[in-house]
Length: 483
Ligand SMILES: Nc1ncnc2c1ncn2[C@@H]1O[C@H](COP(=O)(O)OP(=O)(O)OP(=O)(O)O)[C@@H](O)[C@H]1O
Image (cartoon, rainbow, N blue to C red; front, side, top):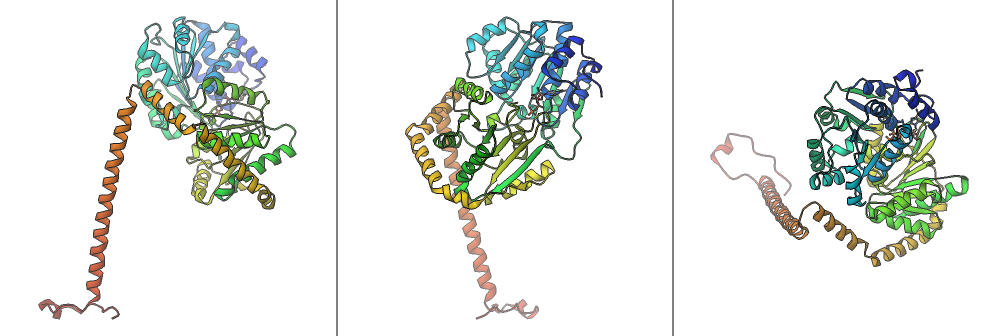
């Protein structure tokens, strides 16, 4: 099998790989590095934890070493934590170059970022919202001459999810040169392939891992069918078991909302599990601190929303628990991909209620694999059920007292102001829209009722003997209903 040198990388980069413990290129690196070095655009779709980051970092560093200037490369990524992780790979692999990088993400000091940008770093790693803010408000830097535009988790950047990047991307794409190399990577590119192909038009090279199953082989994937009301007791039971059976363990638990994330974190702490939370309602500094504590194994449990579902590379994670069944198969693929990375073993357990069974079927269809049931001693769960429910209720009350919902509302208003919207006007518009919707609903119900009445009266009439009409004698009489 070809080594890094055979892919066309310089000896200093091969040495950096060796120092980092990267002995042989992974398949996505084997496929994409030569194409990128040739100057082609690249779309790389490979499983989670398969080394996509180095597949673009290495050839970019090689090209940068041949013609160093700033700003040479712009990397866009959907989350702030991921931006720091990518920057670290650039720093470690690009150490001999004296690489200057700049991280431009929300929640951090904008003035300091503007200063750093004006010093022409070689590589800028950014989340779209904050970079677009800088482009709108400042002319002290330019990305007009970049050689590389990378979109990591490219499908997430393009889709219109709860955080919609499209407006910010328009601003960024208008500021980068048409002549550039565009590199797009993700474990789930196929949904947005057409849009992505529109971005990468320079002899695009498409690399996709050929495998019957879309998740990694070393991942043991299970489901646990639980009634909604006892979900938390099952969660506590699962964690207690891992705690008892394994010396060295790290778990990521995914939840669907910030509030659930916060409540479960408080609850698990009450049971003395070393838990930290990560969600978008936390201050950025708290987010970084939580992740650092988890990465260094001071805290063994990270409970997070989907803000942590993509890209995070924490090799010690052995188990992922989905507290809710993800509504989309690709969210499932990214979440469970936080374990079993780079050839390691891992386990994923998804808690499924009777209302989510169709979601599991959709996941199985997409990943092309059946999930197996995770065996649990139900009697043991029932023993802790009341205690868990009481503790959860206590945590809910505590959180309500801390005005969590109110803070959420304030955050929403702040976000609107940052987006140039008037929160009061938006609220008014929302209320009006709700009114119109309600009116439409009532109208629909009325129409529906009228139609039902008409139908019933027609049926009644059919049940009665026909009136004597001249034609009646020409056709057979309708069947008579019971009297
Ligand atoms: N050639 C290699 N040999 C061994 N380990 C590697 C190699 N390349 C990368 N790795 C390691 O594999 C791990 C996962 O890599 P990376 O984070 O780039 O995965 P990814 O494909 O981007 O995953 P995701 O889709 O979840 O973002 C990292 O810890 C990285 O250091």
